[in-house]
Image 1 (cartoon, rainbow, N blue to C red):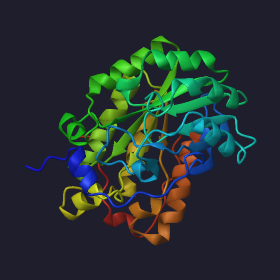
Image 2 (image 1 turned 45 degrees about the vertical axis):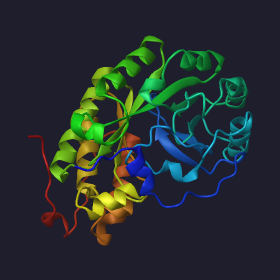
Image 3 (image 1 turned 180 degrees about the horizontal axis):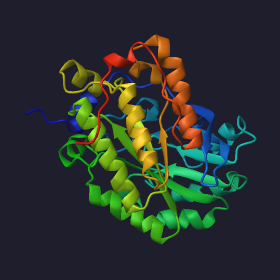
Length: 318
């Protein structure tokens, strides 16, 4: 059986993009429902950074990374430039194509400069691998004026698939990290995959639901469900081999609605590049708007009627 390790993943990649060490490679402002119930402007700065050492099978963030760590001061400079495009945000996400608390990615010497730059926001959200959450997370929190939240990729609780994703973690690593953050009054959120490779559509929905349940039981305040996409080389090859297929919009809708029905915390659907999961152009726009509405209201919305719907199967829990 083929081993989907770091060597296999990297050898099947296309070329990475050219990036500037002192410029974030992207920035956007989106609306997200906060714990208060208000839908607030949330900035996201995609930091140019060295490639994550974990090299997850499904990840495409490496496309905008450097081969070596960026210079000291480069990350604060990128944040400063990104913030100029989003003057009125109340929440900020700093996504660095890896783990914020990997000191080879974000030097601890830059923490204080970052804290000064983000002092005007109410909440700062960063991402981290569960094995890299520890004392430096607390050190950073103590420098901040805004509340800190850490996003962690759980991906799936199906142990065999989680191992094949090359995340180099087990479910218990996620649980330990969330409990550590909770014990130190830091909120966390989980990233959950909808139909990772090596799963059928039905299995993808089933395990996404189980993953949401475990994440909330561990103590996260919210979950983001992400339909898995090709486009990073490795996933495209798995798609050709019949080991991966993109999930349907039906599946994303079902997982989102189920997660919200638990009443354990907010659940958001990742709606980036959503059209590739649609098989009907007639109803896509309405369904996309419906998902965004559910993200904002955290309550059910009327299902979209379309002539294509009777031909699509809906999956339920076994």
